[in-house]
Image (tube, rainbow, N blue to C red; front, side):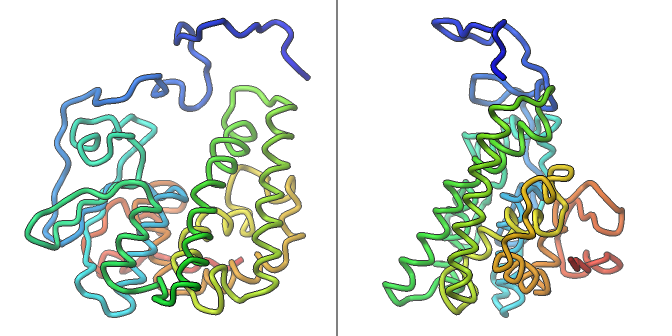
Length: 288
């Protein structure tokens, strides 16, 4: 039901605090709010991130490259606490002016450079190592289409459904219904595709799967947004379930989902990642 007590102003300004989990960091302006340098490791790639679905895309990709024998993909991963506003430090803004995780520094060549936005990171790494992005033009186009399908749908799931269902200060019927409907439609798109092929891009595992898995699999596992799995009837999407469970068994995926994770059970957290030995003693199982 609409809130009849609220009339949108003709010109909006941030005069009031809307509340909610992220009220302390949400502002209508960009740029650094604190002078602070980023930590720096010795590996060719420096990742600054958090184990949200977008962050996990990058860490799964890096771990998959290492699993495939690409030693040049060694990386240091540092946690950026977005709840505390660390994405607004001068160091982080210098590698992502949009202040969103993940952001990557590629220092593997003579001149280092930044790569920000999770989809761009996947494409950059896939092209650099000629991995998880098939060279055939038709297949490549299909894979990239599913990568950017995810880039377009992620905000509806996270900032749309996830925000209003789990994080908003009060539950409102219209936005929850609107974004629940869209989230279910997104799952139906993926389910129909995965009824045709083993993976989203075709018969091979690619960055299309790496992009989509961190967003779709937690719903299948019932590990995101409270009881959203039941609310959205995710078990209705059998092909997505088959795909998610298969990918969840990949060793690189099991490692990647723990990097920069700082919540949950202690044996499934890894604030920083610098070497393969950092996973020793952690519980890598993710059965659902």
